[in-house]
Length: 354
Image (cartoon, rainbow, N blue to C red; front, side, top):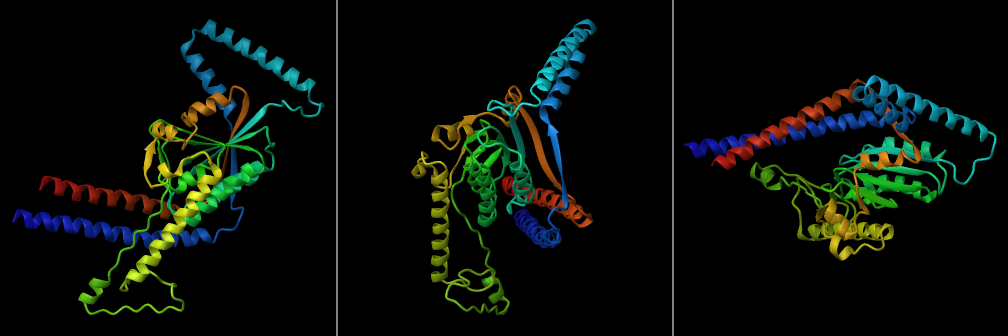
């Protein structure tokens, strides 16, 4: 009796989870359609001077830690140094910009989902930065986090980053958590890839997962017809009966996509041994460094703090205005994700207890 109820409970949990994911997918499609109606420019830029932010933070810490006399002495010394800097800057105000002018670093964020949705903001910020960034002088740093997703979406996102290097502007990608599959496709466009020691790097491969309900439909005497013009218009179907020829063509398409992926990686990092890393596997940062997938072990925080020593660092973001539908969609998406995780956790727990 216990085994029966365990099986039933597990089946129920999985069924509810699938239903939640299905309903959530429909809602996300509706939200995506609403987002697609946005007009270009429906957003605003936010720019923060990280040097000033760091200075204010340092000042607050000193005020809390130093005694009053030491803090006032430190404050006077800083004001004196700032006055001297402004005087020097005023002297050079009317002079043409020299080759050794202070470097500027522009920091962008990319937080990727399966559709690389953040590319809408990324393309706007890149366009803005390219209007002022100086070739061979300034630098763009992209804090990138993504486990990959749709091929065409991430191909487009990688092309956006290529706009930076095509202008002879140094591009550095910092990975604190994950840059896999399409995420690594984007990262490899950079002159320099830095990653945290336990970040996940790689997954140079292609995968497709397609459910098929044909047997279930046949069991209930439901016919489903797929009508096409063109031998390969539809190689695999969710509800129809898939053929061996269709499967072979689908796998062939996956292999061709993988070849294109590897060719792209080779063009960006010609020294990389693809025979070792282009098998779909992933590695932690330290391992990735040994394989040549990245160029250094360092968090984005560490790199940007170091950059503040000899450059003006600006964090640039483009915030797209969101309406009620967008906010509702984000709330529903988060709620569905948590609910699905909860059901799956319970299902796994039932399996372990048995």
